[in-house]
Length: 349
Image (tube, rainbow, N blue to C red):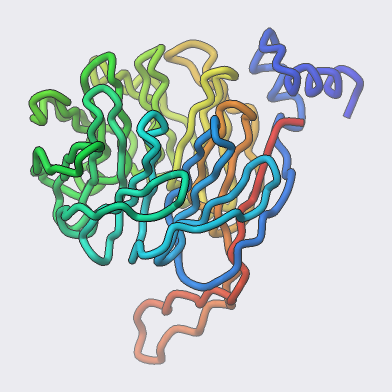
């Protein structure tokens, strides 16, 4: 690395955003591995979420949510009794969190101070992604097999709407200023917009050239959705018109996306290739890849702490794939090595 490159990286790390994307491309890239946080145990995982103000990271894991202190990078507790948990969201102003429990078709309402479950809400079949919408103070569960969204009051737990979605929902984002919730409909290759007051679908937008979008984040200031698609694309969509304004080549097996408002960086995590594609928003319609960060195979889900600019990815080690059956057919899914589950922490140089 030459002196100019080294200086460019140091300036980026300290937040001097006058650097151009072109300078960053010439450098090795702004992100590197900081730490691994061991969790252990058995079972699968899904979404991660950060409460930056409280310095907590929530990691869904089989039948519980693991809670990590992000200042000490160590496990401080867990939220129990969340069978088949997929997601966890925070309503900091209410002191509550909410989990989507896929195996029991319920959402848990949790006291964030004690980590105790206060009550549970019946949802549609297999709630997966979950979203807190602060404008109406409502929680949305997006029910995979139910192909619906269940909406309930965050304070009371009262169900106020069930919205048929016409397909399999994945991740979602809210824009309270627009009065909209946006959600990927994976098997329809579209994004739909929901009016938060009427709970009615108001828009259907195709995501081509993207396909089967899972991850979604939002740049609310510039009205852009960042979508992670199965065909190795990160798609940028104008959430006022539904127009796709940019398409970025990314990794294999994309699951999650994040957007850092301060640094104007978009992230797409891909477990198949073991990478995170990081792109700078040069303008609302132009994104330039500044780094392809090597992570680990299976590190597919991700979240971002917008205060520290760290990204967190869940990962585990797996046994070698078994040979295919003699009669043909697909290989069985490899088994996770016990106690190998962990969180990878990456940050700026």
